[in-house]
Amino acid sequence: MTAPAIDTSNPSAAHPEPLLELVGVRAAYGPIEVLRGVDLALYPGTVVALLGPNGGGKTTTLKVCSGIMPVSAGEFRLAGRCVNGVDASELARLGICTIPEGRGVFANLTVRENLWVATGTGASLKDLEAAAYERFPILGKRRHQIAGSMSGGEQQMLALSRALGTAPTVLLLDELSMGLAPRVVTEMYDIVGQLVEEGLSILVAEQFARAVLPIATSAALMLQGRVVRSGDPQEIDRELSTSYLGG
Image 1 (tube, rainbow, N blue to C red):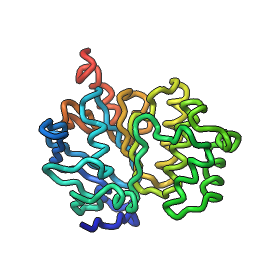
Image 2 (cartoon, rainbow, N blue to C red):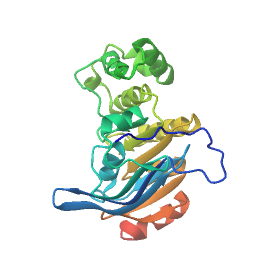
Image 3 (cartoon, rainbow, N blue to C red):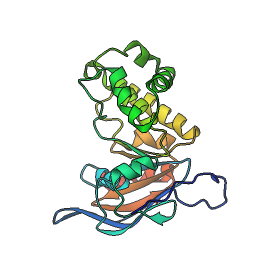
Image 4 (spheres, helix red, strand yellow):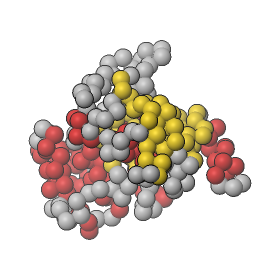
């Protein structure tokens, strides 16, 4: 099955088409259904915060969007066309890039070697390094350091740099805040906001809602495999305590 090219040439249209969309999507691990009719839309140049407690289906939703998890019912759409069954490698070539929970760097490789991994997309190591060290100067100082010996924040910077080296259109982030100090989390989400200003569209799954809501364009609250509420981030923020914090 051939997926459509992602066209974001007209982001200023009055009613832009969703770049990425889930319509009534269901997905399961064997006999256990995890997603139970998820509806979600990511528009060009926006950040959608996918919120909810652990076990709500956030990570599985990102796996569907990256092509790792198959859709058992409903439709996964890119630029308006159904791409059910398109594999992860093809979706990656179309511009969908994922930074998984736990950062996903190669802990036994140096910073430079981690960036070299991204040259498989056609970018040169020289260009990847230049872009990474300009955005994150600390990585330039660490270029020969083993990635696993760096701080969590530095590893997250490396994961972002490697992802950006693939020139993605859509970035999927899973629990960006995991294991990071609050100050570092704020810094990382400031960077995410900058990436959107540069033209990326980002879907971020985050348990700690108030870390991502300040830079989110819209938010969706996910419980027990369903999106139970979506809309303005400030409105969602006000509902968080009564929705799943028990307030």
